[in-house]
Structures are given as structure tokens and as C-alpha cells.
Length: 271
Image 1 (cartoon, rainbow, N blue to C red):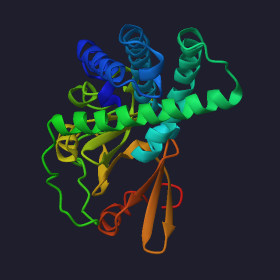
Image 2: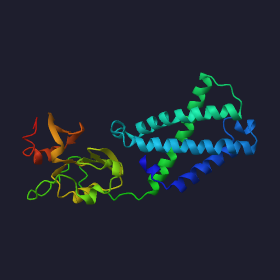
Image 3: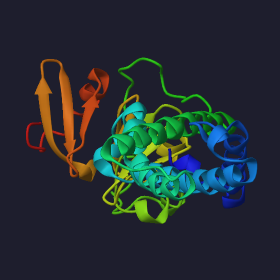
Image 4: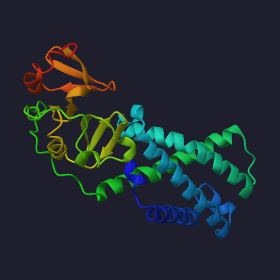
């Protein structure tokens, strides 16, 4: 969802203004009857612009919150909409008291809250889909399509590096840069886990692992690459293995990758 906040501010302002004018023209929630055209425009355009800023800002912040950033996109949308609708509902309540002379009580506020959440969802979700479709999609990953893809290990002759190569780390926003822990494929994006948190970037896993060839790490699954020094424990459950990283993240290991890595992990607790 951080992609929405990356739109240029003039473009965001134009989108919010267009939505506000459309709302002024249509007059939803009874405003077509209660307000003449000009006051209705003054009512809707600032409210939509302020609500847009709040929803997009909270959406961007959600991708930087580690407990929330790992959740499915639908869960993150639900949380963002629930949080952003609260200040928006308070603002709408205040504006309604001035423009519509509405008596405010808890029941009316709850109705306003759900209306703000509905409007936010009807704007935020389609805009996310539009932005995602218009951005260049990464090429398919060059790794095998089988779930148990073999790991891509760094050359044994090269010494481990203490930090990721600048070429790759520069792809991350400044607040997410830190010691690299893992890479995770997520839809058409790559989620980068560092000591500073996690963030999504539009990048191919195969290109990322090529840029990290000097880092001591392994492709442990078709969807995962981990830094060797980030692994803290290994847990075996039948034929499956799971790595626990320094930040508590649990990473699955495919069977074929485990056959390649079990000797390297024998000194790790549980290995």
C-alpha cells in the first residue's frame, strides 16, 4: 500500500480534488437536498482531500509496522480503513455541526464512522488496484516453479560480508536500511526484512540474489532467501525444517534446500 504514498503530491491532490468535485455533484448522504451547489462543494472538497491524506498516510505507515507488514493485504486494508476512518469521522462530525446544524450523539457518530470507512474503502481499494496495474510488473522469477527449489548459495571462496551490497541496499527507503536478514517474495513484490524493519520493493528475487552474491546467505525456498548470520535456531517437524531469524521471523525450508544446507546448519541450535 506504500505505493499510493509514492504518487507525486500534485497527482494525489488532483485525484482527491476530482473525487471531491464528484461528491459535490452527486451530493451523497443527503447533502444534495440539504446544501446548495456552492456550499456543497465547499463541504465535500476539503473533507475528501483531508480524508485522502489521512488514509494514504496511515496506509504507508502500515507497511513500516513489522507486526502489521507481514499480514495479508486484505487484513492490512481492513486495519488501515478502521484506523483512518476515526479521525475522518471526527472531522465530518464537526463539519456537519456547522454546515448542517446536526445534533451530535453517539449513534450519529457511529453512523458517520461507518460511512467514512465505506467511502474510504471505495476510494482506497480501487486506487491501490489502479496504481498496482499501471506500475511495471517484474518479469517472472527465473528460479524453478517447484515449491522445493534448490538454494542459491554464495560462493564458498568469498568471505562473509557484514552488510548487504550498496547496490541493493540503495533500493530501500532510508528508514528501512539496516543489516539484511531475509528476502521474501510477496505477490509481484519483494519484501525485504532488515534489522530496521521490513519494506516492499518492486524487484525480482533472481535479480536480488545476484546483487547479493557476495553476502553469505542461501535461497532456502522458492519464496525465501536468508542471510546466514541471521539464523538463530532450526526446528524440524517431520520432513520439514523452519529457520528462526534474529528478528523472530519463521522461514520455511524446502526439502531440496534442506538436503543442501543441513551440514551448514549443524552448528545452529536445533540443526
